[in-house]
Length: 247
Image 1 (tube, rainbow, N blue to C red):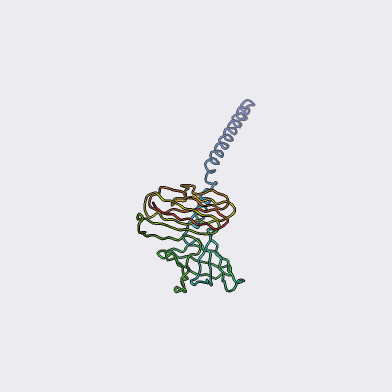
Image 2 (tube, rainbow, N blue to C red):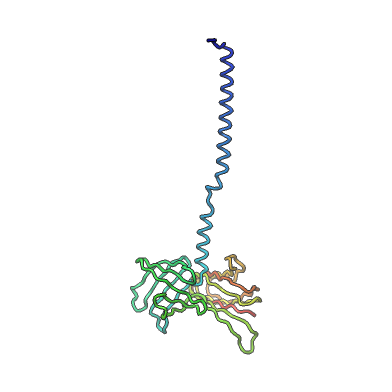
């Protein structure tokens, strides 16, 4: 067997070191490229978008508001708030109340789940703006605080439509402009702190600031609108009323 010379061994050592260095550099570069390519996927912005859409959907739902049973002296009241929570109260039994949650169930139906685990299905009659339990359709509940719509023609005035909204505290209520034109918003507020009202389009984007006041306020704000669906986003600490009419 031939024995390699000392110079030959040195040459092999140099070559091996060079190859090792090149391999290390390639490994570092590949790892860096791989990390750079996977970083955006780990950000996961879709979860934020999803939760934001759910919140908006709840905020703008026409079921949001306070509904009461029929009669001059109501016996039962159920609240659907903008955060998906419910509260059921009985006027005749002050200490009897139920808290829970609500979610849309499709076809103008809403599933209410009490903290006790009991579930009920409520149906919203859009044409009459009333609600009732699926199990007791004869008992119809009217909107006490929320959005009330009315339209018609008055003798001696131009033909048009109007909508009246009333409530107490923060609320988002749907508003339908039945025709294009100049709409006049008449606002009344009897609270002590901020009263802020934003007019928003069907996607929830702000179109106009109708009010930004502190304390008791009455005023008017005109706004040109196309026919379609809008929302009034109200921030308040007391009772308020908003009337919208087309001129």
